[in-house]
Image (cartoon, rainbow, N blue to C red; front, side):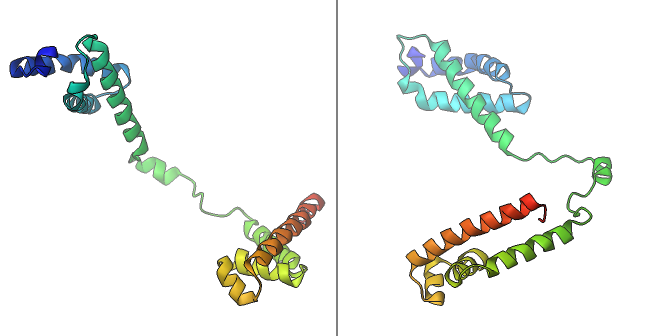
Amino acid sequence: MAAAQAGDAEAYRRLLRDCMPVIAAAARAKGARGDAVEDVVQETLLTMHRARASYDPARPFLPWLRAIAQRRTIDLLRCQSRRPKEVDDPIAYEAHADDGLPEAGQGLMTREREARLAQAIATLPKGQRQAVEQLGLRENSLAEASVLTGRSTGALKVNLHRALKTLRAALAQDRKDGHV
């Protein structure tokens, strides 16, 4: 590497050629397989080329090279784990139960919860009810809700906070009582 840093092109070619098996072994040791090993070798050689000026000839070369190879392998494995893998298994596709279908009675329970929430909202004082309707249900911004209700944004925040506290308490009591 010292000769390559000094500009010896033949030494640099030999160095790159001799590094390939070392890099491949380091990649396999970290878990890379098949084409991934070749990708790691190429990425490591590119990184080594870019970082060759930072190598200190007074220090051992192989640990420096292995560290680069291990980091490139980890980068590649991370990248591969993020990519979704497509699996073609027609039998599994046909035999798989549809998770999208609601369970029996699920629609009724949902309607009961919605009705109970609507009842609880209806019992709130006017300011709190408006805050919940504008900010929670209609998802308006504070500025929009302020214009629509004629209340300040601060008042809306306070009303929403109090309303949510009241609703949580009311719905928690319903759960205790076994209603919803």
